[in-house]
Amino acid sequence: MGIQGIIQGKKQWRAHLARVQALPPDYQIVYKESQKYLFKVGPVDLPDGHLLSGIVDFFEEGVAAGKGVLELIGDDVAAFCDDLVKDSRTHADIHQDSLSGRPGTAEK
Image (cartoon, rainbow, N blue to C red; front, side, top):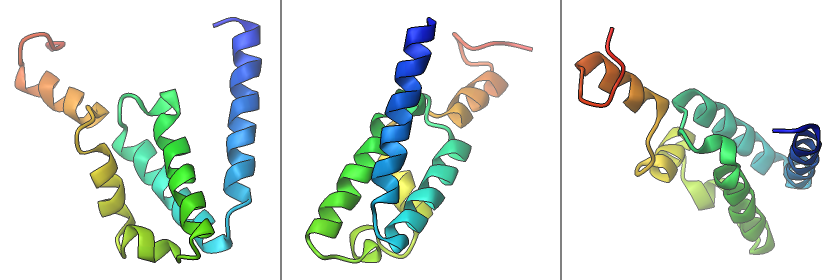
């Protein structure tokens, strides 16, 4: 990635954060908790940015509809996030594969 790519990526991230900051406070809190959880769970494609921007899109629609954030996601942020990544390969999956010695994984 060249310098232009880095600059473009930073601009996109700043625009994304501006959208998050425009959300009501309760939505911001849930977004930040979701983001922390997803960074820990580690979907492999998380750096692509589509998942996080999709959450912001979903939240913006909820705000426009006049709904509270818990009406949209339920009471459990982790369960909401798990549903989002249930079909995604995670870093935990890769680690488990390497420990079990499945073909195509790194062996120790």
